[in-house]
Structures are given as C-alpha cells and as structure tokens.
Length: 153
Image (cartoon, rainbow, N blue to C red; front, side):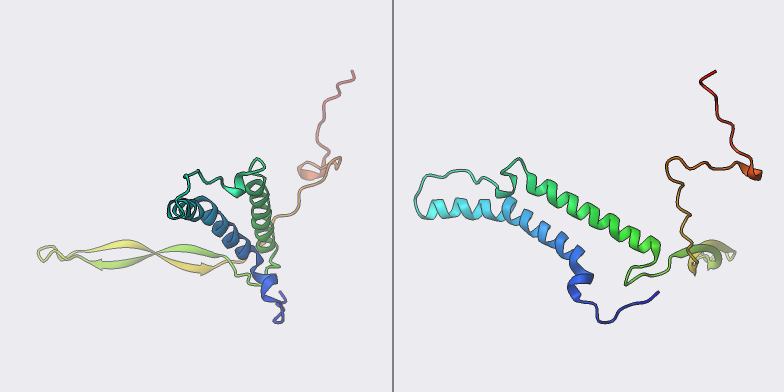
C-alpha cells in the first residue's frame, strides 16, 4: 500500500467537508435564519411573516442532491477501505476472548471468579472474489456444469 505524503488536504478531507457544509446549511436554514428573520421583523416594526426555508424551495432538490452526494461518497469510501487503497487505511481488528481472574470483594467469600475480557488481535483481511457477470456459466463443485432446465421441450 503506497501512501502519497504530498496529497492535498482537500483530496483527503472533501467527504467530511461536504458533511459539515450540509449540516451547517441545514442548521442555518431551519433554525437560525427563522429566528433572525422574526427578530428583524419585530425590531423594524414590520408585520411578521413566516420564514420560507431556501433549501426546501424547488421541491427540496438541494436535500436530494446532497443526500446523493454524501451517500455515494460514503459508499466510495467504503469501497476504498475494502480494496485497501484508502490513504489512511488501517487493518481490521478481531477480538478474542481470554479470561482474567477477579478477586471477590466479599470478605467472607474468598473464592475467585473468572470473567471474560476482550483483547484485540490483528487479523488479515482478504477481499472476496468478484461475482461472475451476466451470461457467465459457473461450474458446480467437481467441475461439472450445473443442471439447467430445458423449457423448450
């Protein structure tokens, strides 16, 4: 796995930046701007009208688009991690159970109880082989062709 040290920060951080930007826009448009809009109308002695969220205009297309961008970005990041090509890829950790001895706090009972404790153990990761494409004939165990029904008879 080769890691480029001269990668631009935007190349590494654009996914979290998109999430924070979307969260900030929703917070402003749904919480802060309505309050400021009402306060502005009260202080200028205008009739109070309801704030219309800018991101919901146009049938909420902004939220649909941002959902698609963030969803595809998260899916792409998952694929990078699975393939092992992510710039900050770490190996997965498997927990194994070991027992540790616990001294009972009861002064009359001097027996020792054992409780499981979990310690992480490194584990190698091998991605699954890709599934065959459309029209590819797979073979059954032993190299035999699978039995396919003949519907023309």
